[in-house]
Amino acid sequence: MKHPLVVITDTVFPDLQITRDILSPLCELVVARDMNDEALLPQLREAVGVINCYKPLGPAHLSEMHKCRVISRTGIGLDTIPIDLATEKRIKVTNVPDYCVDEVADHTLALILALQRGICRASAATRAGEWNGQAGGRLRRLRGQTLGLMGFGRIGRAVASRANAFGFQVIAHDPHFTLPAHGATPATMDEVLTSSDVLSLHVPLTTANRQMVNGHALLRMKKGALLVNTARGGLVDMAAVIDSLQQGHLGGAGLDVLDHEPPPREQLAHKLDNLIVTPHLGFYSEEAMQDLQKQSAQAVADVLTGKEPKNWANRW
Image (cartoon, rainbow, N blue to C red; front, side, top):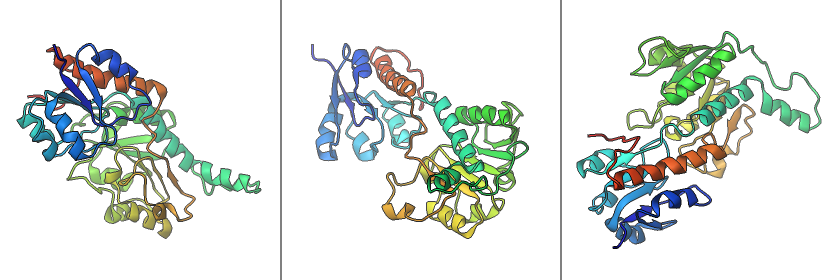
């Protein structure tokens, strides 16, 4: 009997052994690396399951996916998948919302600490031959500063618990966050924006919040405040951030995600020593990658064997 087909549209893993161990007894696996739509669509038409990472799956793809029962997103966000259409077609959509909580929270604090303590600036000066204890700039004590979190899901809460240990006063805005908990005080979006010494973003990207941190929002932040984004690049207007840094209003920015990755070379050609950009590595550890591959494959296996997947995002 011919096994059903599961298509992996793209992958970040150096090998897929974990996926094969879980799914090979149940289906035929096809890895569609670098396939254009013309080559990919015939595979999607036959697929009962799809494992998707970064490749956007639009209405044109889903309209051809008549056999598909599950799309498993290899990641947290669901912005690569038209959820409403998938639900209409009764395709279960799953994600892995908890695989890198510690890693992203740690990376967020690393960016905050590097900016607050002038680490990159001081290191560059020292390597250039300057031995100056004030090369990091005017540094402030962390204890007593206000860390504002936009979004208070798993990662936001993990950031709050870490920030409390450093003495930050943590405030957070989230539509589902109404009571003091997890070491943070509820606040309005406006209060988080205007009161924070450090603003950190932890919300999913939607049409409504795209470029929520734009030129207008930056002007409303405290002069000298810091911005950190380890969520989604589209939440931030990069040009406005660079302009605010150059004008001296924004005190610094730590960005692990950008709207366009990799960015155009000219976007980072300036000499801003209070801007730290890392190449979307906040999610990464060896352990996190193993968890991610295992959970995304297991979701497909669960659906194919008649079980309810653990993280069913478009539950009906």
